[in-house]
Image: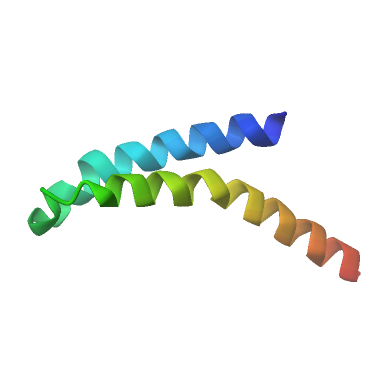
Length: 61
């Protein structure tokens, strides 16, 4: 349950980054709406990948 909440928060933060910060830094991406969705999808799966990596490293010890 915590992973789902963390994933949703991470997706929201990535959504904001893709929607507001990236277009102001790179003006050519102002009309590229797909970058917002790409950032949100990456943000949703990042905590899962991080936790799986931690579990894998701990299992190798």
